Amino acid sequence: MYEPRFYREWTSNRYKKFTVSYQETDLLIYAPKKLVEETYEEVRRLRKSLDYYINSHPAFLSSFVPLDIYGNAPDEVKVMAEMSARVGVGPMAGIAGLFAERIGCYLLDYTDEVIVENGGDIFLSLNEDSRIGLYAGKGSPFSDKLAIKVFPRQKPLGICTSSGRLGPSFSKGKADAVTVVSSSTILADAAATAACNRVKNRDDIAETINWLKGIEGIIAAVIMMDDQLGVWGDIELIKR
Image (cartoon, rainbow, N blue to C red):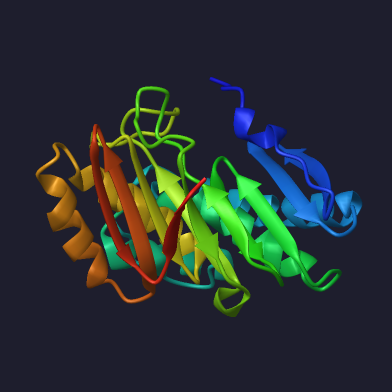
């Protein structure tokens, strides 16, 4: 089911804004110049590579647990399997992060700054300080009031969010939102899913933060549930 992405209404005088869609992939991109054709061709190539593998290995698509990858699998399959295994979820938990990261890195060959958003999961590489707003649903006291401040020294960066209450994605948890920050957008995406699965009540927030601290490659995390907020890591949380 399609849900309107109201957060895509943001505009900027600094960057050009454009979207690229192919099959289930729907990207919003900000860059100093529009690169629609280049982006579309790379999305199409990446999608075909994954589809070809999944057609012959259907468990890759359906598994909720990590999978071992054998044989001559595409690099994107291997990295999804590796990152999801770090946090104990199925490889497709990192699919949105994969497209955001791979397209973002690809576009950096054409421009020195880029933001790629894919279903709320973000890859960014910017030369100036920026803010990424946090949203946890209309009923949350934190929605539209907090943002993560991002610094150029941290680039490239992945910022991914999972929710047990919002959006169409499957979750075992009940957190309003779990946002994870990592230099790997794929890991951030998979870890956000895994962390959200763990938060079934407010008492789980601190335990889940401690769990995230032990995962190599995770830089920071924010967990929002009801009126409770858990924050950890190398980020600056600011008023929006």
